Amino acid sequence: MTGPHATFGFRDVAADEKPRLVRGVFDSVAKRYDLMNDLMSGGVHRLWKDAVAARLNPQPGEVIIDCAGGTGDMARRFARMARRAKARRGGDDALIHLIDYNAEMIAAGRERGYEPEIIWSVGDAQRLPLPDAFADAYVISFGIRNVTDVLAALREARRVLKPGGRFLCLEFSRPVTEALQKAYDAYSFKVIPAVGEVVAKDRESYQYLVESIRRFPDQRTFADMMGQAGFSRVSYTNFTGGVAALHQGWAI
Image (cartoon, rainbow, N blue to C red; front, side):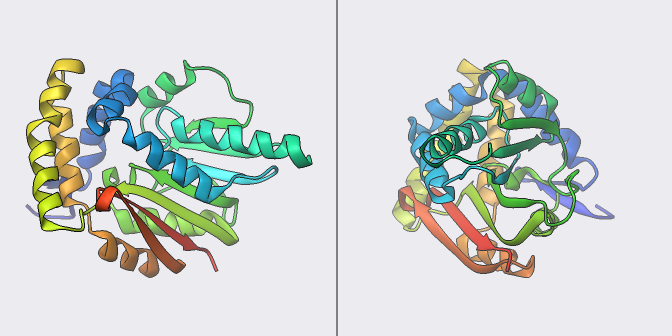
């Protein structure tokens, strides 16, 4: 293969081909995406997301970017938390800019109801339609492994954060023991595509999703990439033995 390339599951593809392929995956799974997340994780993904929202601790008046926000489950968490904080101590509404590359995912999310704090838009994590030093916080949950150039997306996140802004990334990661890794691989490659075939009528998309998880950098490698992108005080917290991890950094 000549020219820039990117990963698409276990395949290497031309970099300019990956966005189309990823869009096709999420066009296919959008309507049943949240149901499949529940089935694949036994509901544990909700606990991980609650932990991310608690770490973020959204406040009245803050501007928060929910990148690759999909159907809005994270953005709705942030909106509810900021609204409760406003009821306690006053202040302006938080503004949550939910940006996703896939219009079908956004449409599925908007069908679930209106939240006044959330602004929905289609956009690319590598070229956000936002000015420099715009947001107090940037969150991306289970989305960064789907971008073509992860380091470019990290640099873009750094660009749009105000000085002192915080970056949080929740992503599937690398289990911390060999035994857990083997069990997780067996479950991922044998069970998840089969469930996708039965529930979402789409085995291929879920095969891609588990392959993309396996090819994503491990915790330390991704932390190093965050440092390369300009983040300071980079740290990570493993969830469920490293099946997922929350990475955090600061725009200082």
